Length: 108
Length: 116
Image (cartoon, helix red, strand yellow):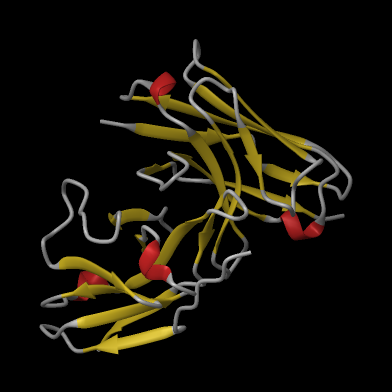
């Protein structure tokens, strides 16, 4: 089964840029989707197909994907961005979706 | 506004069964594949099962294959998950989600606790 690796935590000061990596073997050949989950709430899709944003998601959220690492970038971080962020791809071998373990973003 | 509302969770003994439901509104339900995703307490997201828009195809995680059955009733805009032979490790919040390639909308989740 395809494995996605994320760091358990990332910390950033308000107003700075947070970068959350998601590692996987040749992940650049796959479409990566990102979810934000705040405590006690359901996940929300914030980036899909590597770089696209659903309606209502601020432009501060962006994605990139190349080689063995995909990255979710949050610019001008706000206190309200503090949440768990999880990447997801479709595993073509297993024919099912796969999630990363999630990264907790702390706003200092 | 699109909404997904799960129900049917609760406390069940090991080996028992539960049927989860997910009522959809604000979307053309029959146009979309649907999925169940779970999250054990303090853990990450785990995909459980998916079904195509017409029910012609179903998919299961290895951890639930042979025990869980996904189905849908497009006339009722409702998704189901029949869970049999439940184990302690099935304890989780179960989310209904729109899509199967990615998950564009999520319900609020329903808690399933498997314990004696």
